[in-house]
Length: 285
Image (cartoon, rainbow, N blue to C red; front, side, top):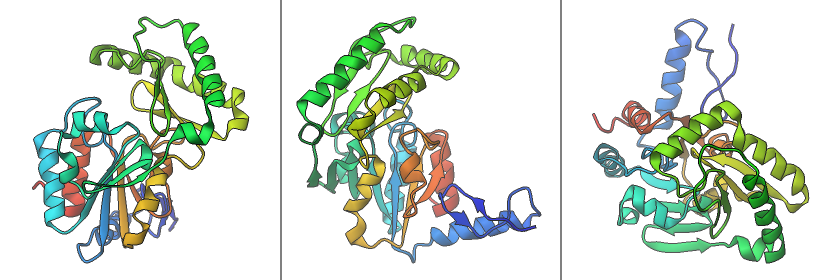
């Protein structure tokens, strides 16, 4: 029996479920490969942390080569992350903006087409100092009462377009980050903090979204990663592919992953991203 399965695109693809006869697998294959045709004007948009590079690590040469090959084949390449441009440089390289067509930082609140700045928006002007102060004070009191194995510095990081909250502190080492991620998966530390923030600041019009391994992004409604899509609408892309690792509801790739204007692809790691690029676009083979 035929059903309409929700694929990673976030839209209902007219195919059979994978539990149905083998025709469903062929139909799915043909659908996504048709959407990856070089005859279509296509944007390939990538999350950074966990998608193009391992958490807080540098992007490796095979991924850099795959992105370059995508551009050589005529595809437009863009990156979108919740962090600021300096953090993107640490992972993608000092000159990465010359290697992609679009770079969107803090979900696109800071946006570049190539090397040219095309958009900038600030949280401070939108939310106001008094509300920011209330939010920071509450968060620091909450974190102070948390019983964690270790705590480091920078529990609240103020960015151009968002606040980034980390119960362990962003100054933790890679090993401490990994240990916290495992503890968080068990105890749901960040999920509980998100619930507390949502209840306390329900009138502020903010989103509280779990991102990466150790943090929570705080930004106004509509300032999630779908914000960046407005910067490419004038380019009239036939297809926009988005690749990200935090694609579940409540995670910071979910909105753009499931947006009707994108075909979303969930990945588990940079190696998984490469495998999907090889399958869809024939790069890196």
